[in-house]
Image (cartoon, rainbow, N blue to C red; front, side, top):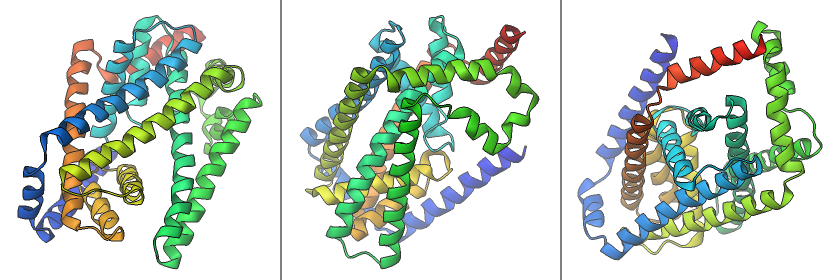
Length: 339
């Protein structure tokens, strides 16, 4: 009940923020910008968006192949779209869909901890790429814009901490050391009754993570290259968004926009209602661009995400996966196995 009230409260806050933003921005200018978008720019945007989703799936395909899984690309693409939709529609900072992706993989005669390992590897690579990109971007940003001293310090500290954590995580994995158990100890989860029963599965799960980062080095490097490709496509995607709005966005402005979009989705509000619009107004203001264009961009991004989410929910229905009952079933099976 408490969790439901928190989610409801976050939605209400988001809606209020969204309405306040709409009230302060001349919507007729936003609509004019969107209405004058050229067909070639819209088509380019759609193609690149599909390319990004496909590249992410290709990276996941590489990870699953190292675990001797021969899952068709189109299946993995469908599972990724489902995960994307679940993450977007829940206040989960883009993480809510990962267990769902793993649950869908169990349809291919996999245990849940094995399926989850491929999803976690894929997500770890994604976050690591984000850390490197963010660090490079912040350094570039500090040289390009005269930001308040406090903001510069905060950005730099966050970028260094983020990158350092990812480097330490990678070093720990490649050395074969446990990462889940120490985290569980810090959080006090090792004292729970069910933890001892799950210890063996946790070790098996970690062995799969270590194997990929320590032994499958060629595949790891390929996934890094694919991650770089997704970032190039992402910049191209926002380039097309800018052209749709009649703006030729420079590289540094696109970086700002991408960073602020990421921050917006960290806020625990489903669909980033309000936070996405506010983040784009701030990004466009810092870049010295019209704030009405920022709202136009956020609306385009929102339409794209809603379409991906709608497709994800349709696919979820097609595969007949009830998230709550599936997770319960997986837990019960795990208990039986342990006994």
